[in-house]
Image 1 (spheres, rainbow, N blue to C red):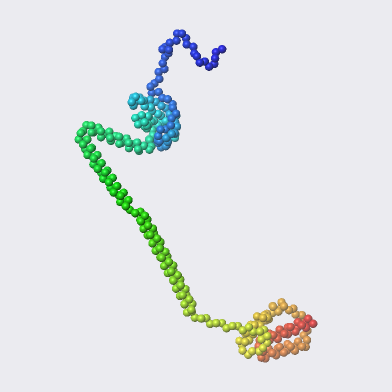
Image 2 (image 1 turned 90 degrees about the vertical axis):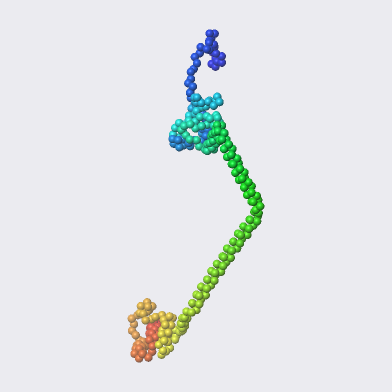
Amino acid sequence: MSERKVLNKYYPPDFDPAKIPKLKLPKDRQYVVRLMAPFNMRCKTCGEYIYKGKKFNARKETVQNEVYLGLPIFRFYIKCTRCLAEITFKTDPENTDYTMEHGATRNFQAEKLLEEEEKRIQKEREEEELNNPMKVLENRTKDSKLEMEVLENLQELKELNQRQANVDFEAMLQQYKEYEEEQKRREQEEDEQEMKAMLEQAQNRRLLADSDSDEEPAKPGTKPVVKAKPTDVLQEDPQPQSKKLKTESWERSVGKWNSKSQLAALVTARKQKLSATQVNGAENRGTTTSTGSLPSTVSTTSSLSMLGAYTDSESD
């Protein structure tokens, strides 16, 4: 039984390797390789930014008829991550870099463009000097003049530095500090003056208000009301003012008795024959009212006393 993993193969005795046909592959054959974006770029189709270091499955091919010092130049094809547009760039062995070819624009290459422009100007100048000796003289005079200007500017900068070196920065700081303190002191004085002016205005207003109150005429004082005793009502007084005071004091102490509703609520009268004494009292009351010698308050008190006697007789 033969082995599954054979290391040695059988070659027949008449084997000729020259007779094996060779595989003919095209020169522009493309290979699929895994690479990272060598620089920042932006897609021209959709404007998507592709940053340096992003990985792609790219197709690689050898550029035909382009060689630098025997080194071949390779071209790479990638697709945009957003719109799948094709982007191509190739190697630049002369500058050890990559060059954008199609489908996108390279970002952040201002420094590189400046260097390329300087190289181009230097190359043109060398070509002109090689064929025109007068151009060489003109360029030398320009260079010497530019050198003189640079030296003059350098001398001015040195003088300016020397002037600044003689300046006392501590004295300047001290002067600025004193100026700040003086300004603060002035502000405080202004604030104090404003406060004083405001206080004076308030005092003046208060004095004016006091003087106005003093100039107003004094109101006549009310006479004190003499509180009369309830028993003073029984005494006769010919003056009407004294009668009024007595009635008011009686009404305050006892109350008004001229309303029948209040008396009806307080006393319940029984239907009973009047006695001889009561008849005589009624007659006496009629005589007093007809003569009019006693005031109205006396008639009120007599009726009150009769009412009290009537209630006492009923209780007996």
